[in-house]
Image (cartoon, rainbow, N blue to C red; front, side, top):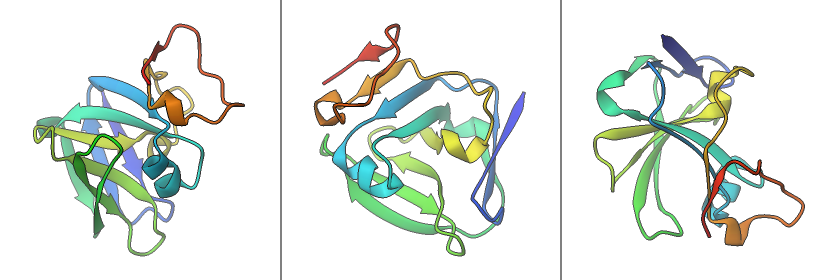
Length: 131
């Protein structure tokens, strides 16, 4: 199975092969700022199963609540973040689940930085919770 993730305008595109190794929701303040939402949802893939099909990406590095740094790749035309490279996991690429625009995408199994979760946000009971 190949899944295609794109920015809003379609200029930046990546293809991901197979199932992700982890799907998670992050409530950290940096993810809230980056997405403009109250949390981010990402799918982690082994680097060798992700390839950029086309497009230019702008890059932004930031250090998250964990103290680790990631390099985010976003479309310079529309601004959508499509994927990022966590420094602490050089063999992995994380892809924004929303960039797949697929309502059938598997649900997250992990919810992290819940200490920063907005009080009105509810996660499924079966998800693993981390403060």
